[in-house]
Length: 369
Ligand code: NAD
Ligand code: IPM
Ligand code: MN
Image (cartoon, rainbow, N blue to C red; front, top):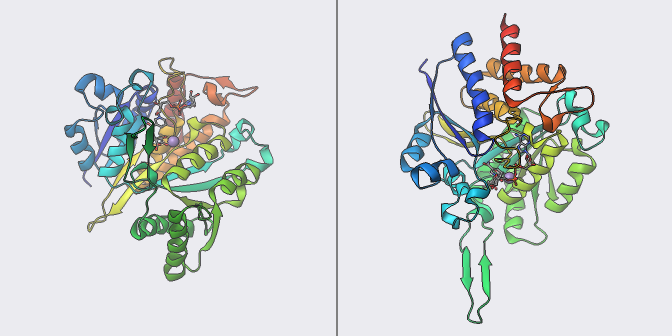
């Protein structure tokens, strides 16, 4: 088979530190498992602003559009926070999502047995937890028009953003959720605020309609977003697949991350629609950001990014056994008590980002020996 073209965009802060460890695992797979990768790297976010004058260059955008899959570290940081909106590092990420039409953002929150005690919730509430949050990623209040800041005649300023969803935007992301549910626990909880927002009313109606037409055997429930936020910390195991809009999905996935022990553990996949040849654009990234408070210290947890790479192996390349190999290496290293600072507990050993990478490579080598 032809080599897979991967574009790695390390970005800012801890991004380059965690992507470097994934790069070593990818190189290991290429060498030891004869998986053909052509890996290119590019600049994104603040790193691109500093070197090229924009958060993402047209050339890098084109490489992302052409790649079989993109792996992104993180973008942003205090150095660039003062820039005008359109020039901020975060714009690169929003543009990648929008131009690549990555409308479905999969954010699994899984609790590894070894990390049950790292969760902020009681062990019984999270042991075995396996939730899939499907976040709509190219619509809603993130992109809705009108938007902007205007000055009113009386001199006050007014900031405007608009929540908008169309039938098609709702149906295509809901379809992804139903398809995923069928391969998991067969339950979907659709989350909005239909009690206060018209876009939420439409969301609920369209999800229900799609369900009745095409997925009647999947169990569908509806929940208001504020209740969902509460239920996630009250009794998280009630959920299988959650499907929700861009903003609620952003918040609920950070909340779910903490159930797993650390934001440093949560991977994500952002997927577009399949074209006629079955190819779909895809971008994989940790849910966390550039973590400016710990950047440069070599202590960031690389596992969210590594697990994002495992999702790439599974969803973009159909390399299920390689994905499992990587996930099992993560499990094994955690079971040995090796922890980056964010998930350290009594009786475990604190390791650096690089040492975690070393341990993973050792584990992978012994797994195939
Ligand atoms: P953050 O996710 O960067 O950090 C939140 C907290 O989690 C920090 O205490 C951080 O140290 C910790 N943390 C995050 N990742 C970690 C890891 N891998 N290992 C250990 N600890 C980790 O969120 P923030 O501080 O709100 O945002 C910082 C910058 O990142 C901002 O500029 C923001 O816009 C940007 N951001 C980018 C992305 C992205 O690129 N996808 C996502 C979120 C935030
Ligand atoms: C995320 C981030 C982004 C978002 C920002 C950095 C644009 O928080 O990926 O969760 O809000 O979507
Ligand atoms: Mn977020």
